[in-house]
Length: 220
Length: 220
DNA sequence: CGAATGTCGAATGTCGACATCTGCGGAGAA
DNA sequence: TTCTCCGCAGATGTCGACATTCGACATTCG
Image (cartoon, rainbow over all chains, first blue to last red; front, top):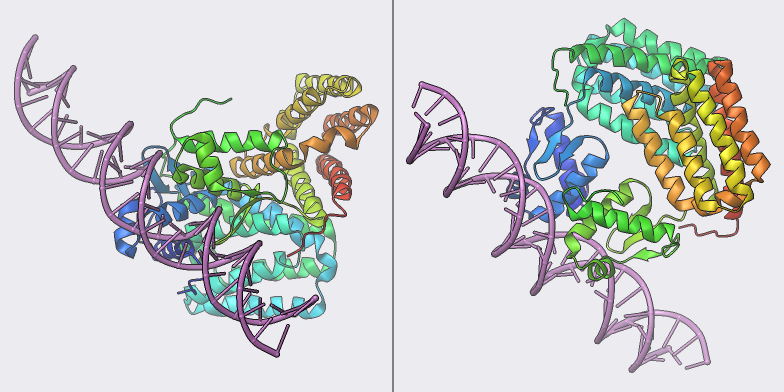
C-alpha cells in the first residue's frame, strides 16, 4: 500500500478504493462506519473524514441520518458523467495542443498497440492501466490547474465505478483504432477537431456503459 | 438562510460563507476549528466536517497537521478557474440551446437592463444578485447533472472568493453590453458561437480579476 | 552579536462514550 | 388475520479529553 504520509484519512480512502476495485463494494451498498473502524482498527473519526472526502469525489452518496452508499448512477447520469469527461479532456488537450511533440505522439501510438496486445491476451488489468496512462498523458499536458483537478476527479470516479466493464466494451481492434484516431487528430493540430474527437470518444463509451445499467432503475 | 435540515454541518458551512461574504475571512487567513467551535457553541467534530466540505469545494486549502486556510489563488489559478467556468457554462448552454424560448431570452434581456441600472446606482448587492441569476438561468437549462454540479461548485467558489470585485471590473454600460451580447449570440442558435462567446465572457473577467492579485505572490 | 538548539504553548489528529434518530419486528386489539 | 402502536437494536451525530505535531520564543554556544 501507499506510504502513510501523515494521517489515517488517506489510508482509509485508499482502503475503500481497494474494496471498490475488488468488487467487495458495489453500487448501492451501504458503507458502515463502525464496520470500517473495526476492520482497520481505528476509531470512527478518521473513517468519517475519509467517507466525506469520497462523497466530495462523487464515489459515495450521503443521506443524512442514514449513512453513506456507494454511488449508483442512473444510465442518464452515467452518460452525463462521460459527456462531461469528454468536454474537460477535450478542452485540456486542445489548450495544450502545441506542447505535443512528435515524441509524445509516438509514445501514444505505442500505447495503442500495447492496449490491443493486452486486450487480445485478456490482460484486463494491464489494459486498463495503459488506457489510464494514455489519457493521463493527454490531459496532463494542460497547465490549467483547475481544469486538471476536475478532470482528475471525474476520471477517478469513472475509473472506480466502471473500470470493470472497460474490457468488454470494445474488441481489441476497436480499442486500438479508437485511440489511434485520437493520435491522428492530435497530429492535425486542428483545435476544433481535437475537442470534437475527444468528446465523441467519451460519448460513445458513455452510451455503452449506460446500456449495461439500463434495467437497474433506482430513481428517487 | 436555508432551512437547517438535519445536522449542524450545513449550519457551520453557511456560517463560514457569511464570514467570507462579510470580508471577515480573507484569502490566506487560517480558519481555526476551536475558534469556530466556541463561536458557535459546538464541539469540533461538526466544525471539522464542515471545513472538509469547504475544502472539497475549493474554498479552503488544507495543510495536514497545520490547518485550513482560505484559498489564496495565484493570478494564474484565478485565470484557470474562470477559463474552466467558461468552458463548463458554454457547453451547458450550447447543449440546451433548443430549450431557450423567446420568453427566456426576453427575461435575460430584462436582466441586462436591471444590471445596468443597479450598477449605475451603486447597488452592488443587487447587481451581483441579478448577475448570478442571469448565469444560473443559462446553465440550469442543461439537464446534464454532472455538468451542472461542477458548474455550480465552481460558480460558488468564484462567487465567494471574488464577488467583492465584480462591481469594479466594468462600467455599467459594459456590464449591460457584455450580457446583451450573450443574449444575441443565444438568439443566433449557433452552437459554436455560443460556446465561444461564453468562454470569452469568462476569460475576460478572469484576466481582470487576476490583474488585481498580481502583486500578492504567495507561492509555496 | 548571531545562529543553532531546547522548550513551551497551541492547534490539529484521534479516541471512546453518550445522544439521537431510523427501521424493523413483535405484541395487542379490532 | 390484519392493522396499529410500541419498543428495541443498531446506525449516525455529537461531545469532551488525550496524543501528537508544528511554530515561536527563549536560551546557550561559537
